[in-house]
Image (cartoon, rainbow, N blue to C red; front, side, top):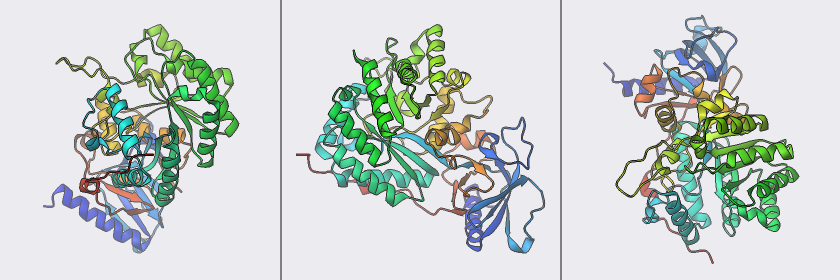
Length: 456
């Protein structure tokens, strides 16, 4: 009897051969109702359901009830029984830091605290972030994400001068190189007090606009935060940009950047998209303040992304031999009840802000489920790593499985959600344009000795 990994390998080979011929039918797959669009199946009340998926020339031709006779003649298509395997759309990762990724070996002073991460990253950026250094680490990370089944990524780019003149051209080259495999977006990142300098703000907004990017900043407590936020919104409006903020990455209950961002959006009647990441301190507020804040966030049309890996790693970090007492994540369930779009994302990988990770969104979702209790029921939480971040990024054709769309999806070994989330699913079959990809994870040895000259 073939072992599960062998069965996956055999199925992968069969799909690859069938894709080369142009058409095939995957019988008895198990899509998720929340991320699959089909008019042929009544999926009411079902989180997952059995279906047959017909693929023709790289597109999904039909999604029909399992066992329905296919419209294609037997001689025209290969037919493969998937035995109830879970199938999901390719992942969408809306908050990453590709420019910081994999610098951990160069930052031995990093101590797992937020302040330590800031200092260690600042030192490494000054010493090593040449164009070649950033490009090699970005490409390494993207090869990992592609292997795991991610089809779209938004990365933040540290944009304090002179790094803005280095990382943005690198990003544009990387985006072109990866076009057709991973849809890439970039948001600038700088401390919001830089917005006091109108010359800098105008310059970076122009740079971001020229690259088709997103205007972003770290909205940490500042005495003039409301004014700085209004400057950000005004600059975004002038240049036709969306906004993306880091905010409230702390357990301090006095910090309320999310509320202030929502208030600024309402005051300025901002028409673009606004995404807020982290929002940790909201969990430390009293119930009345939480409800009032979330009412404003919903009214302003702001979306929120939680970064469970990084927030669990950094928040409540202690060096006195005691155990952290809170999970560090924001209030996704409460946000969802207020009608606020919510997502999960990878955030940092192998850098001082998070020492681990490999841009595998299944790993992010698995941790999110355990930390944030995204189960019992599963409900529509799979949208948080697919359809919802795709909408946040303005990518309507990403994050769902639907007839007429590109056949981009992941076929897992697991036949139930528990099976999928209980193992690493290293043998998952990633289908892009109807055919399985054939890639290996990059070896960490590629990064050995990676150093760059210090900036002048």
